[in-house]
Length: 198
Image 1 (tube, rainbow, N blue to C red):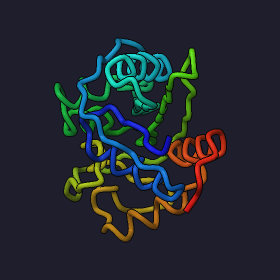
Image 2 (image 1 turned 180 degrees about the vertical axis):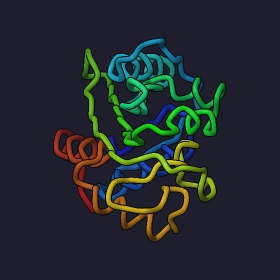
Image 3 (image 1 turned 30 degrees about the horizontal axis):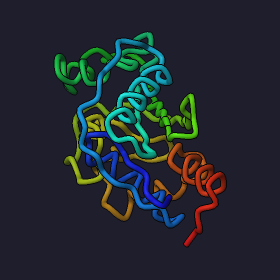
Image 4 (image 1 turned 30 degrees about the vertical axis):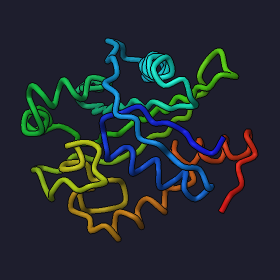
């Protein structure tokens, strides 16, 4: 087994995970599948339902990913309901809500893996701290997997993810590589299934 299927329609997420797995000699196969969006505030529960749905369709080792975005000054809003927030009030609506409030925020990610040997998925999680910019800055890139990249300024930087050049983005990713959910997953699966690292 040297292939893992990623059930998603988000090409930015595919690029992100593929880069991490390629370092371990693992090929990520994009399987563009519309997944259910369970109404839950629990990332693990959402990722669990997504990967079970995906595995029923693909019947090969696969992953599914869910992400949340949390703004403490808004009691955590929009939490796991990111897509709904972006489709309704949008980026500018979110920025309007945090006017005159603390702008701290964070992404939370949960990747779930499932294959024929498992009765329950294995989960890999990570957080990315930052703050909201005062306006939309930059442009959506190939590696962007959310429009929030236009307003999310990672801690320790002064640019939104969308303002960064590709080189700057790669450098930022390298700095937090060990703590990312993609690295945790890549290291686990390469060890568990004895993949040969490149």
